[in-house]
Amino acid sequence: MTEHTAIIHDIGYRHYEGPRLGRGNAARALALHSLRGVFGLGRTTRAKIIPFLLAAIMMLPAVVSIAVMALAKQSGIGYPSYAVAMQAVLAIFLASQAPYLVAPDLRYRVLPLYLSRPVTVLDYVGAKLAAMTAALFLLLAVPLTVMYVGELLVDLPGPPHTRDYIASVVSALLVALLLASIGLALASFTPRRGLGVASVIAFYLFTSAVSGVFFAVLSANGHEIAARWALLINPIFLVDSVQVALFGTAPSTGEGYPAGPWSALILLAVIALALTALVSRYRKAASS
Amino acid sequence: MTILATEGLTKRFPRVTALDRLSITVGTGVTGLVGANGAGKSTLIKILLGLLPATSGRAEVLGMDAATRGPEIRRVVGYMPEHECLPPDVSATEFVVHMAQMSGLPRTAARERAADILRHVGLHEERYRPIGGYSTGMRQRVKLAQALVHDPRLVFLDEPTNGLDPQGRDDMLALIRRVGTEFGISVLVTSHLLGELERVCDHVIVIDGGTLLRSSAIGEFTQATQAIAVEVEEGLEPLAARLAELGEAVAVQGRVLTVQVRSESTFDAVRDAVCDLDLNLVRLEQRRGRIEDVFKEPAA
Image (cartoon, rainbow over all chains, first blue to last red; front, side, top):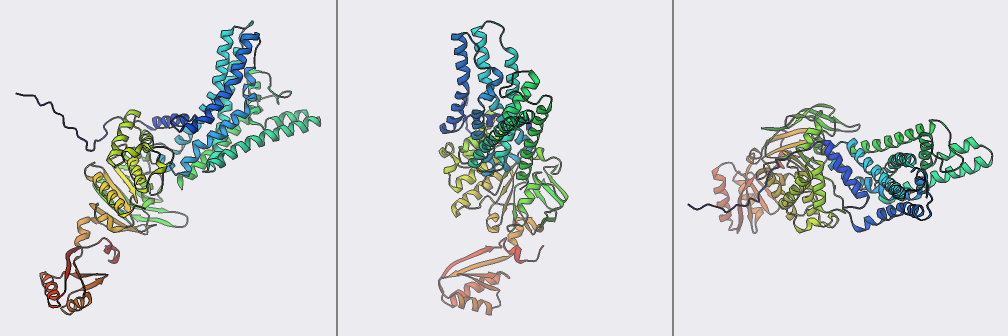
């Protein structure tokens, strides 16, 4: 008897019998997909240019710092002031990428497709927030970590600045969360990416200009305490002041910030406000 | 088997009542949901997906209460919206894979299913190109693919033939028929064009102003009226006059004469009248009652 070895390939419809994962998995997949997208991965070559260019610029001070440590045997740029020194780059990154995360889904009305699946509005917003926060955190934490590893390898005289490094990484997370909340909230109010970019960058320029002007005017008139409060208008200085309060690091600008837990409370309030705006924006978009 | 059911379902918006005590049941197979624009079709689908709370009444999908078990329903139901919903800068493959993951499929399974379903809806090489360059027909196929990629038990198709040319319409309707029969996925398809649903549906529900007008199997719709269509080269008017004289119920619709069949003798009368008047008969066919007629009849 001959064995029948021929196989009939059935190209008809096949049902899916495999596992169906829950909301959590879908939200994680969305966050990962969004994070990749922020850096242009899985998108066109043109979409990769700006994020990678900005990431490279973020690395420069770390590289220079390691060179200084290795050649001149001196400490380079301090960890706690890294975010303040690079704030313009962070702002440009946020302005260029936050609208990418939220605007197309609103503009091309993809949102109803997400919501016709198990993911909820909160899952969606949470995934987008996680992606933007993670991207900004990586942007800051990678150069900080490279610099710290460099410091350990160069082995400068004296103990390594481990405490400063930890403080800077924690505040990098705070900066990332604050900027991501504000950036996404601003960008979500317009389905147009260009307008989103403009509004985020305008927000940064406005707060930093207002904070600078108030600081200069108030300190010239001898209102030292009020001038210190004025600095907190700039979101980056706000997080720096929290870092000073939490870890006792040296302030990166001026004579210091208002003492006490106020800056931490303001930080939490601003994040809460931005997230409330973001969620209510999406609640409204979902019901229309 | 009942796939979905509503009972006294009412949805009031501040200015308008979209659904008014609607009670329907839908079984397996392809069901058409017919109604004019604004009849409440899209509102009904949103309530069934658990995305919109009803003002009063109940809705159940696959045995689950839409008001409380929305996420569970959405895992096993697909939805193709009426509006455009595709991002232009990604390819159909990437998009459908992503949407499969959003439905809970693991990444490798999502890839396989996306490739399969895109082939089934008839997208081949072009599926690797950005969606921005697609024709309306191709976009509708992508929209259908994302609704089917997670192998749902039931799929809601909201105006799937909208904006398609006649050929595209035929292709889409054939595809919908295949989804219902070959794929074994129950379909609820909406349209404001009644005629096209006759060709693909097992059952048709007609709603108007948020209330049920009629719900019955397609056979009952088309048996409702028995008529024959007669087309002659010239002399339609004399023929109509002759038949009317003989007591037949006739109506001229453009170049076609519709004659209500009273009994077997109607056919003889038409044949004799055409011969007597020496006309060239082009067409003589059984005319099925059209779903359109539902709107002319009083609500059943």
